[in-house]
Length: 420
Image (cartoon, rainbow, N blue to C red; front, top):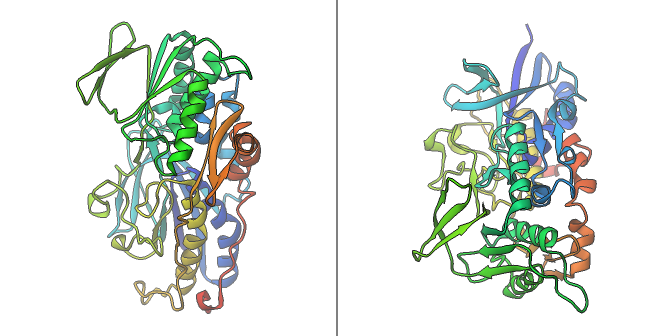
């Protein structure tokens, strides 16, 4: 009887999609060629039927007339349907537990009461993160995200006041989109009359605090031109929904603000609640070897990629730079596996992750401009629009990421090779 070894990817966020496509396109054919008497099968587990292109969420949530919702969802059945069912299976289910000593994943399918188990030979955790506001990321399924997008659009359309908390990229983008759409853009010799009072709160002393202050100052100037006021050193301590649908905010200073629409756009939470606490950091991220992207505490052939992992700074670059590291070390471990010595490390040299520490951020502010810095060089507003602001990368990145066309083979070095 042929031995079946399961490779399981939990999560179909951007990181989960890319690593799954890589395994299906490049690793499974290699393993078929190099191993005999063994069959490898890839399983992908994800709670939503669709991948949501969350990068575009600030514009979609502002108005679906700007970007329709159908342009930001891709059915996973289409994404993974290109592969043979003998090699790849995707399961719409929520991961509920990990038994790493037994090397099993527990999960619950949609509309099913009972949990199921799946044995894994190798495991990649790519469950990503979720925002505090449900319109900006997938919380559970497609329907939940769609509902959040539509309710935000409806609330913004009738609002006289909007408060956004968070001075990072998402908060600035959301404020810019709302200001542009509801108040209009300034002209050469005129500033439009404010129709909606929009306030952006941040606990920091500048906008976009991960880049230089001059860029944050430029972002404020452009937001002001769209009718957005910015308040610094201001933190929301509590938010209470009133019976009339408005929200009362209590600030850390004790001041209260009542607004028609409140959008918490500060930070993210790792989707790690299903993982054993012994594998998590104090901040609930999966404790990952920052060089090899292995989860050493979980035993051999367990890896993590993207926002759920402790190596990541929650940036797209950390996914793109981490993918070659993970797939190279995964390939090394699979080809070197010896059933008689399952704990033995692969010979040769692991690939090591090196974070990109150069300033990297491109932030559209409305539909015509923005601020940014790439590899330490400032990006003018028209170029921000050209690179990202036109359609939030939908034309360039959406289908390429979803269908794996942008995932290219990673060549390993002589030192990384494993003899088979």
